[in-house]
Length: 86
Image: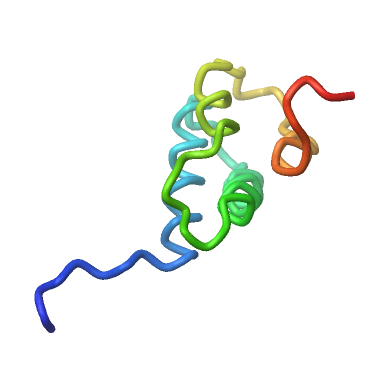
């Protein structure tokens, strides 16, 4: 090993984002796949560099969503559309 920090893989970034989303929603049980899909969509939307947090991630952390509420298509919709669009 050369002692230099390694560049996180796309999977590393998705895993970290999914965990952050899960925590911000109150750590609900049994929905790991939902958070993985949302994180994956956000990371893909950021592109290769991934330097900046997308607006979606910061918006999600302030919602205070109850654990019982379904995610539905929100993650996919947020990744492709501007907030507030109909």
